[in-house]
Length: 312
View 1 (cartoon, rainbow, N blue to C red):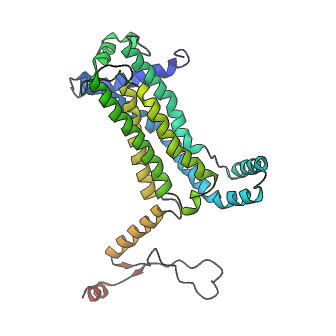
View 2 (cartoon, rainbow, N blue to C red):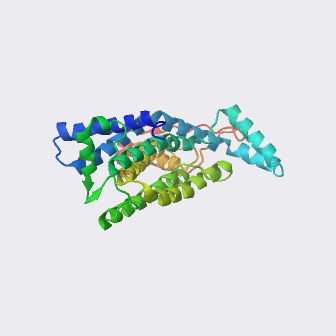
View 3 (tube, one colour):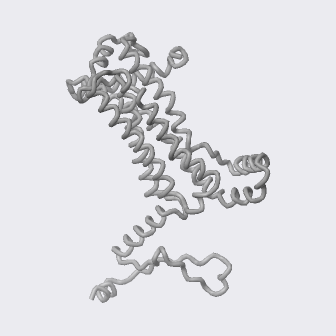
């Protein structure tokens, strides 16, 4: 396995060493545990930055899936008794619209090899078996072996230590990892999806991710070295912040986040003295447009004297 992962083992270890040099030599931090913990966080920053284009693709795919929900429900009704035909028609629809229903899983899947490589590097540190670039840097390998945070070694896991302090910290971090994973997935479903998108196969996929992934990490987290748990916990916080930005700036059409954005824009316009329609109200329809699209209302600019009269 290490032979297959050799390039990633080298990459992960060299990125960590580079960050360690920044914190130890440039910033002058003289603490093995702090330096290596920050190096793991730095590893997250590098990998997640490289995955930003994939995250953008994930958001676009989710938007497409939301728009396809009415058509998917029609297919479900039409081929209710023929599951095989339903799957074929759904695949045709995905291909026609250029939609990938599994795009939301890609960031997790692509991070998995890096996560496992970090696991192997830290496992090698715990077992005094240098992996990746560490065989050529004995001083850094020894430093990583001494690295402790709150009295717990970063290379130890819940199951590989008899130190109670390490086990307590490991459980706190694993629970934090599970909770942040759940909150991150629920954030997408409850804030950035229209109600109609919460039904159908796409919604089922999201629900599986919502409940299954946290359970997977809960039972597997006890096997991970503390450094690996720190990596995933930091990655979850990165995802949470990234999603909050996207939900606030680019909400999905018809979602609660879009309504909140409209209310913010209306309030901002009012503060500038502009009169705007309430986002909850339907726009007025001109004669002859009853069956078509309503003309969009434009904000009405008012003079300074009119604004003073309103305040009085």
